[in-house]
Image 1 (spheres, rainbow, N blue to C red):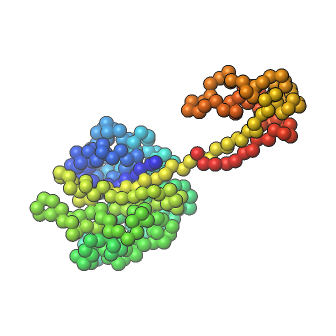
Image 2: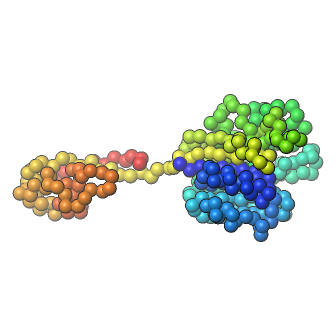
Image 3: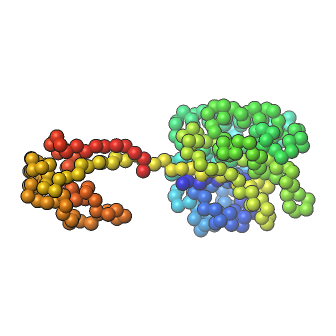
Length: 341
């Protein structure tokens, strides 16, 4: 099982104790971080390495910033920065391959105040993401695009929608742009597992120092390519993190992925008669023993593979033929079936 999470940390250095505590408690295999709010030089790579994670990051002083962490393996960077606008200097996208999965980590513009230039930039950024998302799907590789999308897709994704009607995260244009992702073939992982349940990943800070539960929104999403959608047993949000000491205003969202099992060949061997090979016919064919050797009931010279008792396959291989499948005798046929491990 591979577990992938996304977390807007709202300042990676300021929230480092929260981040490290969460990583220690959860042991996710891949973690995407947004809103680092730090330069590349001040990213806490050493602290994360001590926690068991190797990281790549795309930082920016005081604003934005994204990173991909991998536990027990090296994320292989594929891209930093979303294509489509060479003049865009914001650190909002980074992409890597981790364990055969393409992971895109993104921090989509908030867009407020809206309408206005920041909202126009948000919609242009969304158009670039939609276009690049089509390219990723054409590659036909297992891919996840996760992060803070700064969009509330439907009324179900807000505890109380009314206060957000004038916010860029809930504008009709934002929601229409977001809808083009699943329309183009991407799967909303959390919504697939929880189709009718209200799920929140963000809450406003409260003046009491806690958080306002009535302000809950789902803005952090994990969108999956079709091949990953077929291997999705579970998804959710670590809501408790939002109630920790000095937390982010977001909580981590996560998915679990079943590993794609390789195919193997299983050989079904016929039971050999006690008198030797194939009732004594072709006794020397391909190195098989003479009829006088009782190898079908003889204890093998070598121990069976670990975890399995010696069976008739082990006894048959005691003849040391080494190429039993190429035995041309018509009465020895290895039936082969293909199955998943």
